[in-house]
Amino acid sequence: MSTEDQVPPSQGVESLSIDASTSATAVNASSKVSSTISTEERFQIVRSVGEECIQEDELFDLLANNPQPICYDGFEPSGRMHIAQGVMKTINVNKLTSAGCKVKLWIADWFAQLNNKMDGDLKKIQTIGRYMIEIWKAVGMDLGDGKVEFLWSSEEINSRAFEYWPLVMDIARRNKLPRIMRCVQIMGRSEQDELSAAQILYPCMQCADIFFLKADICQLGTDQRKVNMLGREYCDDVKRKRKPIILSHHMLPGLQEGQEKMSKSDPSSAIFMEDDESQVNLKIKKAYCPPNIVEGNPCLEYVKYIIFPWFDEFKVERSEANGGEKVFKSFEGVVTDYEAGQLHPADLKPALAKALNKILQPVRDHFNTDANAKDLRNRILKYKVTR
Image (cartoon, rainbow, N blue to C red):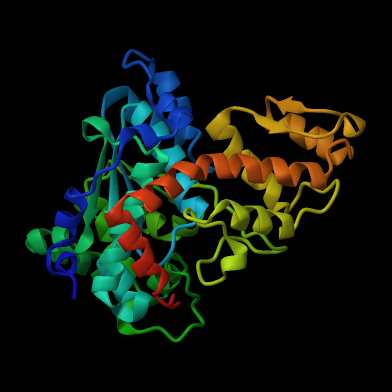
């Protein structure tokens, strides 16, 4: 066992060091918003993070009356990080902090253990958590001035157990088993799966996290909606007027036809944050991308949710015979040309791969030059991903 594995996970985080010059200029620039922006402008920035918001009027009222609302986002350290977790989360977090929010990133190591990730090996899970934080720093998540706080569930729950467990028990007591079972989707499970008792406890704990972290906004994926709604229902049960606002972000699909989300257990379905240039090029080349069809086209989704938020444009390089270089300033322009056949997959794919490689290069550089980062990467690459 290494020395790193013998210390609390947060001590490992404190030792991380990233050269600020590796951060992505475009993303950092987006976070530098004047503190004098209006409530309406703050609302538009925060609202743009979510595919769905429950409720918009509550969100506007919150921003009008709270200069630094708390946004909560949790994640299981369960394997390599793909671009949905790495790039999209960085984009969303930087938007939120630019609008004055404080973001609490809940490193759900105990939850990953309950869900049997890494066969329940907590040391491996915590190593993955450190690796993930390294990536977010390298790719350009704006962590200055305490805007973002990484909190390890195992440490925080242990330090305030007298607060946490009575809350979990109260949530469990007030809900029937069928209501909790409807929430197992948050773990990547279904009601038909054979679940352990730990996995039934999981939704009650995740619901408790919202109140334990004093979150004003639950900023998670649409796949976490059911348990966030459980949190709002709990407020009704205990007559709590101020309910958590649910801001559910879009789920980026896998690269192959019909894959609703990227999968860590299927490397062909995802682009990982430390993939090299040739791997990215090959995966995009093989990706599902039917001509003229926008619906269900993962390559176009990546352009919409990754490339435009990062660069504010999408540059396609092609020969003069095929229309010459074109710089799209809106996703709507891409859709128009693609549906009309004026933008072909053979031109879109290389442009997408080039843009993704530009975003990922600082991460590769960091993991190739920083000894601690390199060690973390090499260790997690040996881990077997368990469902």
